Length: 159
Image (cartoon, one colour):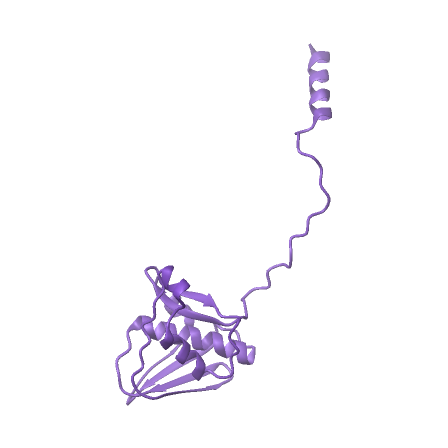
C-alpha cells in the first residue's frame, strides 16, 4: 500500500500542474506614493472624484478655476461627473509654498463646490511647487467672509 501511494505521489510530481513554465515577467514601475500629476475634482453621486489632466499645461492656479467652471469633458459627464463651481464675478488665486488663497466676489458656494476648488487648487499647487497635495491648505475669501484653511482630505472623506 505504501509503495502504491509513493508511486502515485511520484507520478503527480512528475506530471506537474499543467501550467507551462514562462520566463520572468516584468511588473512595471513600483508605486511611489501620491501621484503628482494634474488632477481636477468634479462632483459625482458618491462625492468628489479626481480626474487626471496630464494634457493640460498648468501655468498658474487661476487656470484651474477656469477649468472647473468649464466643467467635465463630455466623456466625463457620461460617467456622472458635473461641476458646481460657478463664479459669477472676478476671482484671483494667490499662493505661497503650501498655502493657497482664492478671492472671489461675494456669493454663496455649495460645500461640494468648495471641495472641488480646494482639492483641485491643492493638486495644482503640488504640480507647480512639488508640495504634497494632501498638505496644501486652501482658504477661500468670499467678500468679507473667509472659509478655511481647508485640506483636500476633509472633503474626500465626506463621500
